[in-house]
Image (cartoon, rainbow, N blue to C red; front, side, top):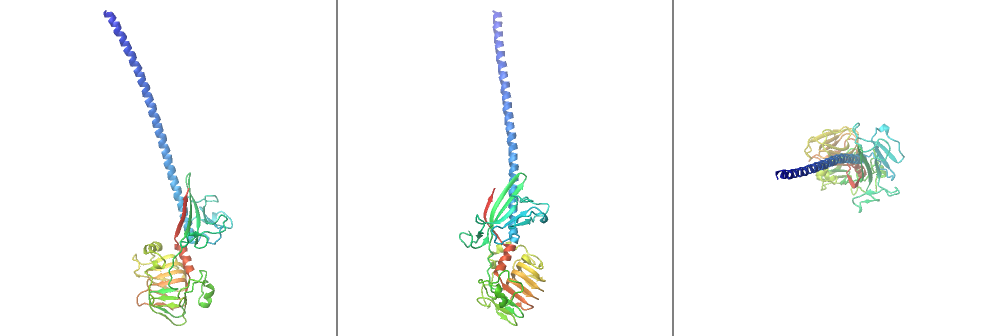
Length: 417
């Protein structure tokens, strides 16, 4: 009986041992399956991380390329402002700006102007090409499909983009590159008109004394009026049919002596008037903050000659009239703003607008096409006497020069791809 029981127990032991071996095998298989699954997950995570890294790098390059394209639009706009891009009313006009020195530019057709980038050498942003291809920074007029009519922008019209009046609309195409990334910006832009608010050829907040050979004319002259033109008979051939103002306007008295001459409409002179400008910003249809942003920081000395938007002051306090400046002569143009006194010596030629917060003194010959505004100092009359001083009013000259050097732009459309 004992022996039988032992055999039975042994059989049960064998059967128990057999069941344990099967379980360990299954466990091993399960472990292997788990390891395989984890390996697959780890591989997937690695692939995902690598893909995300590639995507992130691509996104960075795409953004860099877009930034470069936007920089190209900025250069194109600045070249329009400076007059480097022709405004010749030719609907087929094209201007291209290349990343190349001026002596290595490609030769293009008769309707195309080719310019070298103005970026500093050795650090060019890639928003154009160095040779003729589809990625060159390009400017053209917005026209009808036949390229026979130029579209223009006039905020006073409805719609503002039309073909009858206003500034021409330019289409700028700029392609930026960074590695294998390429982004293109196509924008339409136009210059905002300069809103000059005239009083006269010469307007002053003090008395004006004309004598000697001084000559002021408020009839509206063309911007192309020949230098040296003066007197009614000479001026008639350069006058426009409308837009005339008085020759002189003042909040105080106006006197004339010697061979001085004043002409204009509705009167040659208007004295004891009210409503002098609150500041230079009113003369240009701006707010004070817009004006100070537009005119930029002051210069401590006058350039000879002043060209562009020139702001003269001896400190950072606006409109305190504390400065004193002198110009030795030469040919200037643009907008000259003087916070203080201004003395003009020798032969001076200027096209545009001059605004003086203090006294204005002119020694020697001067010929100004545009307008002169003097706030002045109390009990200090504005004297235009010494030498041969001529001021011819020209809205076109003011608009052209201020637009060239300080014209603001409106973005009509902007597309990125």
